[in-house]
Image (cartoon, rainbow over all chains, first blue to last red; front, side, top):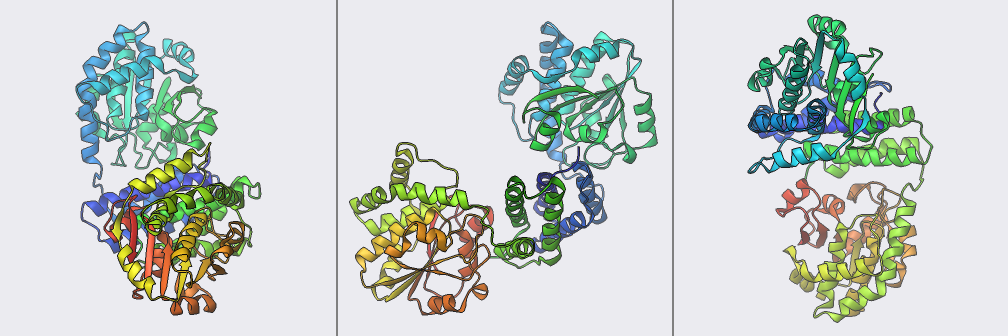
Length: 291
Length: 291
């Protein structure tokens, strides 16, 4: 999919969130915030071309941003809180999966549905937990290639899981745990970002939620939103190429990894008009799509 | 007030709404929409400077836009519908004002409160009318210079009303009618935009709602959002300078006309963080401020 004019404002919102973080942390004055933002926009508008993916437009913003700043993790607290909140639910949600008729299918829905959850949500007295369980039961995939997944995984020796956001990786961990329960000999790699980008999961988050208990975490090499293969590490590309099955979470990984591989299962909730249109679903719908 | 980095995204939203209209009217392909939008952003980011007013940033967008297109009224239907809808309520709302203890104060609240109303609202079976009356009674000004207005208007010979949006001008007409009822000898000029800009009122709208019945409509010369004095006609500037009292509606006219005149009453609802901060009120609050 390529970026439409509507995608540009999403990229601008992205850029503004970064500036906002820097401003709040008192590193920037009002003038500096304004000027930095304009530099980002200038770089974007001078280099954007029709036909680029939305995440390629975001990359332009990040290229410029990385010229100003180093690896500072602007969203560290949000990510830690999200990890913590979902870790508190981990055992209960895992039990919930195993209490259903098809634990694997439930775990897929749980992990996909939670791709929609925003940072800033709170779990008061287990209410969110209850809501998540109830929504997982009631919501269905608008595109559902679960059977194709079962076919493919039957003969698979290894699986690559490309994660999306912190917090959400706890739900991915549940999914991987359930997969491992059914296919104990499967080797599973878990790819996360190589640099802090918004609320995307990094190796620090992978360690925090104990992904190592169920898979082999590694950095993909991507320092941009999503995962553009040409901008990843050679180690990641090797694992990707040799994987029998790939699970890719979220819109931005969908943009980056969508291609002619016929082994990548995209799990996501459609969050914007452009992606929903590309997938021929409505905004907010759950997608489990092989391509 | 000067534009903060947050204001930039509002300007981008503005630009996107224009592109969206052109796209929908089938004049632009996807590529053309994207490229035109990028041209607008390029012009904005190359020419924006810290210290400019938000409406000066918007002007940059319009300068570029006017290079592509002529006077086409992209929001003609929305404006006509809004004018029509409020005209249907005109008599009832006027009666409502006169039924209250202080009709003039009520008319001020009515006109200011309706500055918040969005296009796209509908009046089913008089429900909106009822809601407007009820909200006009219950809502109060967060900044209230009504008494100063009464002092100034007492000795005034002429008043200039600088309008904001179509539809809303019907409520302005009610306010002017009530002012004229109390001060029948006052000469009142009604300034509107000289070119169609989003949903701002033009002379066509002024004629449609019959502003002529209560005041002398004229074009201000402004072809940008708001009213920047240096970018208005000499006739308008003469009227502005000679006016004993000016009533300015909306955020954008506030940005443009706020100065050291001590005769301009700003009527607006604060719609964004920057303006609310500048006025020391909360978002959504009503303002009646002399400056």
